[in-house]
Figure 1 (tube, chains in turn cyan, red):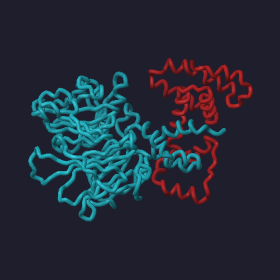
Figure 2: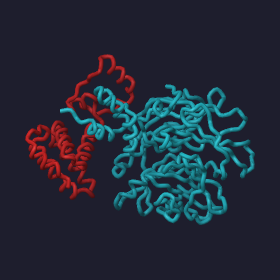
Figure 3: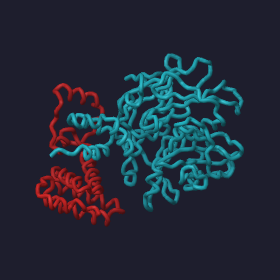
Figure 4: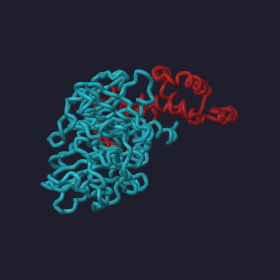
Length: 377
Length: 126
């Protein structure tokens, strides 16, 4: 009895990416369903957060191996073994690889190729990659600030900041450039009306509700978050939580998880406390709520510049009952915190501290579909 | 009401898709669902039980019944169960499960398997 296609799609969209790649071999019907871009989107929407990690401390080392770990059965595990190894090497992309951002399972990586800076967007699952056009040869350096997806045009965009020399004044105006994946040039979209915060405060990608969000240096004493509308490419101030003293911030990270924006902050004056604010209603300033306080000596003294604090399960956590745990990735370590603030370290066999680890949703999104114009394998 | 199609089903004598046996499993589901909706562990146990007691062919029939009866919760539940059952299984197992045959040209299938060879590691024994 043949299964109606919609039912088959219902079943297949619940399977992990690696399984789906195998099941392409089952028969032609399955091959067609799994290769369909619409199915890739549906599957992505259903996928839980996984971890993408490498067994090295950064991407620039040869013999880079990637692993994907699906986060399942949190409550029962104290340790995980990496589930699937991806023999996808990206060393051929260039030297000095640096991970910039990820969106819908695609990675944005900057590299140096034959002494020139190149930016790539790639999907480590399908093995596809595409180089973005070279920026203008005006002697200025660029810094990637965001990688996002525009719902209306169904295109991916990469945003970068044009930075001057190393010793520019702090409050100098910087220009911003956008490249729509597939186009041959970067577009200058004008001045950035704020100054970005210290690089250590950078999150990976705070794209939510059609906008990117960045921490910026306090402006008018209150604004410290900037919102970028992905569709109309405009910058605006965005309300932040009532942090006690913006001038005494030791560390701050802005992130999003499960559809919520969150802010981790630690002040110089709060010795062992890290406050985590969650914006319960997007855009509503009063909805910023101090949801968690982490009391962890090790944490607060750790080297925050090695990576932002990432909460992995905020959406699920809010729906779960008592004994629910919050899962946090920080400095390549995974911890679970319960309501009393007690921590349980989760070990992943194969990952050492400071290995490159990011939250990641493996996807079947094909770069060929994402791009109108050039693409390369 | 979830069961507007049930009456139609019983009236439709030419219906070969759903046997009485299946209907008796699907129809009591809503009550069971409501009782154990909040408790994930019980659902898991029920799922395990279902998988043990019900042969793959029966499970696919259950799905078709739920689909025909337009019973979304049961359909999603069964699809989830099937997905968990086939998640780490081999391509051959899946073909047997759904009663499918490979319709690839001899060379094609090999090429595909080679391309995704890396994803076949760690698959369960049949």
